[in-house]
Amino acid sequence: MGHKAVVAVVVMLVTLAVLPLTSCDDAQPIKIGYVGGLTGRYADLGQAGRDGALLAIELANQAGGLNGRPIELIVKDDGQDPDVARIVGQELIVSGVVAVVGHMTSSMSVIGEEIFSRAKVPLISPTTSTNHLSARDDYFFRVYPSSKGAAKQLAQWVGRDFAFKSIVALYDLNNRDHAESWLNSFDVSLQTYGGNVVEAYSFDSQNLDAVSVAVAAAVSTRSDGVFVLANALDSARIIQNLRKSGDFRPIFVSEWSATDELLRLGGGAVDGVKFLSTIDLRSKSTKYQSFRASYFRRFKENPSFAAIHAGDTVRFLLSVLERDSNPKRLKRNLLSAGKFEGLQRTFFLNEFGDVNRELFRMTVKGGRFVPAD
Figure 1 (cartoon, rainbow, N blue to C red):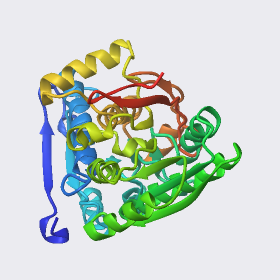
Figure 2: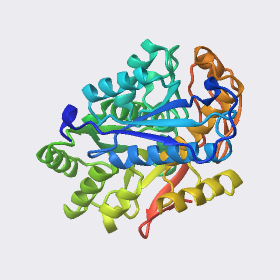
Figure 3: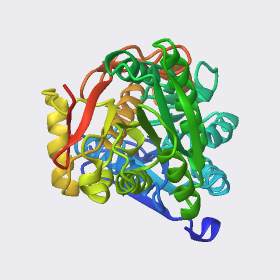
């Protein structure tokens, strides 16, 4: 994108059904912000999160809003750019939002945490994993597990079950806080099984030559498997190039790249790619099945992990605001909310606003994401 000059600002007022209101104060909408990368190479993640949040608010308004008040979603595009993230963060604060859903990548959440903590506005991320924001007393919350916990589970799969002793990694510097956090945690955990990351090649996803150089280096490095930490578009291209180079080692990715873009752009090359998922595609949860059906009717596609977690983020936030809508007490109320029945399973935030989740082993087979077992 053109950075500051093309910041996309979308304001959506969803008032599909509102109960009769009794006063001017009651008629004022509850404003919630959403911020994610809606344009550029990371747009699939940001757009999915926006749509999941939007649907959750539409469904809440259809049910009468928040204690009879309409809910307004103010949407901003961070463009995966630190300067833009700072600008749109301030715009959300000035607009009077009580909380913000986002950011969708770790690097942007690190920027956002500073902005929103300073303003004492909760920032609740559906998909941020960086360890840098773990166990901190701030205004950052998340419904997504940290890199440390997820990396430990992947190391068990790779080092214990596959008995791989060596992994070569490629990672995107444009989301450094996610990629390096994940990779470092994975390497440490893999060492407990007698393995390690023998080489890690970084690249700037905006530089095609840099990506090609990293792929060539990975091809020439001996290892039992390959770990790719990048968005869906770049992961697809990297995996295709690896296969074209005659490299058919097992490939693992993080959930960051596990969107339909990976399947669409990667084609047959991504068959067999493995990752850990925070969602259960076989879930029979009534709430999940209902949300999934509503999402398909609304957007003509099935919800990705980002959409599902964004929907859960909004539902959790609204459940807390329903009990007490005073924004000055929101941080305390989020931390003391206790267990919440999400779309697929129950979760709760710990004293630092972090969450643990069960992860599911997944693979790509025949152009679809399927359980690996």
